[in-house]
Each structure stands twice: as C-alpha cells, then as structure tokens.
Image 1: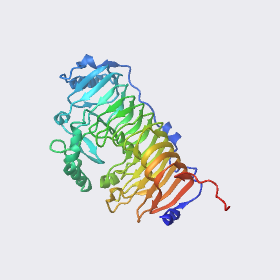
Image 2: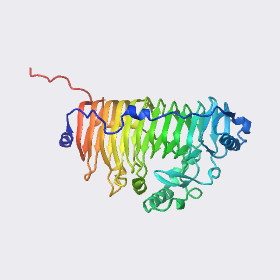
Image 3: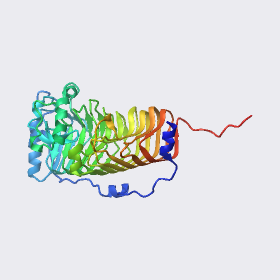
Image 4: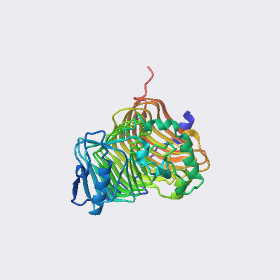
Length: 445
C-alpha cells in the first residue's frame, strides 16, 4: 500500500490557467429571465385551498392557457393547501409564484400522470409518467416564492423502487440497442417513478426560494437545458433516489445558497448513459455551485451517467451541516465512455463522512469497452472532521488511468484509510494532512 501511494504522488504547484471557461466567464453568460407585468391569481381560475376533496389541477391548466394567450406573466398561488390530481404542465414566459404558506400537494394515483410524456430515466430518453411539474421546449420559465412543492410519495411511489428492476433493465437495453425513442413506451404496467420537477430542452430558467418535499424520484431535473439559476431553495425529501438537483446534458447553470436535506445526492451532474449518451455529444458544462449547505447521502457528485462528458465545473464555499456518506464524488464505469475534466472543488467544509473525496472509474464494478477519461481535477481548501472509511481515494482503470489530480490545503482530521491510489498517475499533493499533523522530529536523549 505504501508503494502504491508513493508511486502515484508527487509534490508540485497545480496549474494556474484553466483550459476552459473560468468561473467568472461562466457567470457572465447566465442571466435571470424577465416576465411580462401580467399577474393572475390561481383562485380566479377555480383553485380552492384547504379542501382535500377538491382537485385544483384544472385551475392550473386554465391559468397556464390564459397566460399563454396573453404572452406570459405571473401566476400567483396564495397561502393555503392546494390538492392536485395530476401534473402542472408549463408554457413559455411563465413565473409560477408559490407564496409563503402555500403548498402544492400532488396526488399519488399513477393514472393521474398519464398520458406518458417524453422524458428520461437514469440517463435514457423514453416516454414515462409525467413529472409532477413539467415543461418541454420552453423559454423563460420560473418557479419562485417560499411555498412548498410536496410530492406525497413516501407511502406510495417510494415502494416502486423494489419492483422497478425489469423496467429499468429494459430501458437500458433499448438504449444500447438503439431502439427508436417513439418505441420506448413505459408508464402503465411499468414501475419507473416520475420526477418531481423537470424542465426538458428549456432556456432561461429560474427556480428560487421554494421548498421541495417528499419527491417520488429525483427532485429537480434539468434535461438538455441552458441558462438556469437555482437559488434559495430548501429540501426535506428523504425517499429513495431523492437527488436534490440533477443536471443532465445541461450548460450555463448557477446553483447557490441552497439548504439541502435529501435522501441521495445533493447536486449531481450527468450527461446521459452508455451508447445514447456517447452519440448525443452534448456534455454538461459551465456550471457553478456556491454557498450551499450539504446534507444527505452524497454532497457534490459527477456521474455515473455522464457518457457525453462533463467539464468546466466550479464548486465554491459549500459546507456540510450533517452526515454525508461521501462528500466529493466522481464516478463512472466502462459502460460510459466520455470524459470528465476541469473540475474545481474549492473551500468545502465537511463534517463526518464515510469517504471525503472519491474518484472511481469502475462504479459498481461493472461495464466494459468504454472507459471514461478522467483528468484535471482540482481540490483546494477542503476540510473534513472525520472519514470513517477513507480520506482520499482515486481509482482509475488499467487501460486508462485517472491523471492530473491536484490537492492543495486539504485537511482530514481522522480517517481509517488516509490515501488509496490505484491506476492513477500525476496525483499532486501540496499541504495535505490526513489523520493529524506531525510535529518536529524527536531527538535522542
């Protein structure tokens, strides 16, 4: 073990110049959408608060149609509990403002989320139950306000996790067999849980201040999107696979000032699965994550579905408020291919974790034929109080080693395994301390 560590490490200064857009250049490309000064109140379209027997979905459908006919505007949801027997489908130029004290509660009957819509599931494009809030091919969309989006999934949709395998594997087979998208029909008779909020092929997106609770699957999913700001949100979503924010085939995104408390990855950056992802050639890139509070399963994650590639990611000034299984996690396997590069983790404070920093090219120890090229990862000013398993792990692949990984000013106070490097080269460490700092050498008495 000592030989492996020493063979994979050297001391040097990390490069000063990034090969892609800098954080400042990325932020300069991101803007907030504007909306016409046209305000409508959802109750004027028939919505009724605080009556669990009343379905307010038709009111949202009517309000969306009305605002579309007038060129856009703001739909206001006043305080109260609103029950919806089905999804909200967005149109362009709409700001759905859910005011503080307002709660959107979505019913759990799967029939309400049919007919199927074009979406994706674990990196494969297909038709499935509609996400609870859904928009496709839109421009200028927003969800704002301090209200709550509640998926009501803990007693219903969550149970599908145990019976999804057959449909899950079918979706992957259709992907790798290049089955035409129009033939990938899931929905009724299958058990792929829908997303809570999904915008698909949309531009100019704002999600601000809302609270996310009890999602059926991934909480917020941006798929093939561009120019998005997600900020001020909070989470209480602890069902299986309740990722907080999933970005897939998406670019020019700012995520900031968010309180995560969810049952899987807090922020995860993806770019498609296997054959389809490799052929899509649409990497996720130009993404800034800053000033967020982390709590859940994993903090900041790339992969594992990333076959189109991920690059130019900047994480800055985030800290964990509770336990994480892994703090900083980069994962792929030899089914994926693609490239992960120019990833920056700066000023991250972790508390108790299983692993503080982990790169793996062999996720789940499966896959063959398409190894991911992982290189140029920068980790600077990172602290962890305790890693019950490992402090720093870098596992490449024999045919394509992970390379050019730079650590500077990293402190992990306690770790069962300090450093484990395998199939890695040019792993550079400067001012790294794991398991405590050594004092000056003792002398003979």
